[in-house]
Length: 247
Image (cartoon, rainbow, N blue to C red; front, side):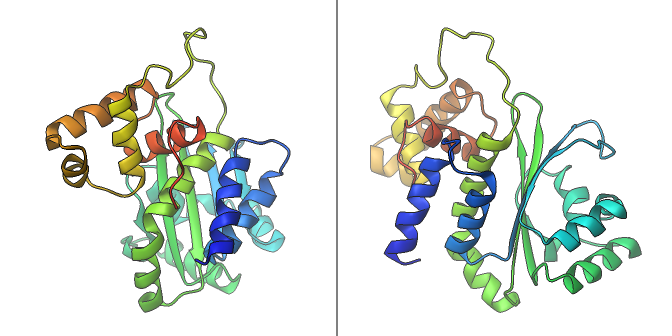
């Protein structure tokens, strides 16, 4: 990405907390920054795929949205079926498809121009909410491999930032204490290097600590931020201004 795109994206991350910009503008800006074809965020009742009142934010065409709703396509959408039971990001091409209806779904989706490759990020948080962020792009497998190596970690962090904005907010039990107020300097440092894509081993070398100590600080930060994964902790810390967003 060139400098102008980086500036736009940093502005976008600031705006994720600003209600003055529309949700659709934010999604379209991400598409523009990363050259994506489509982007979708959905959160549903964790107990059932039958929930009919999910929160959905998508950039799909009106025609595809109408088809999806009219045919109850979520019942055969492999990204939804697989994503709402998994915990790690996955590429659509790596999902084993045994149901002919799922194969048919992907063929129809291709006819609607959803893109050649897809990438989904399942999200879990401590409130019990489950969400799924999916992205599609018009890249063949070879181009996708190169693209994924370069941008995968950034897209995962963006997914969690979107969840911070779009998910229903549950008031914390202790309203007197803001999330993140009691993070130590070491915990913030560990999160910042995690945001930079460093492993625990690399962070340990940088900070002059053991790998176990780094994991201890990151896990403490996750608990204090009321998050489950490192990516969610990084996203929430960024949203709270505790660390700088790194892209």
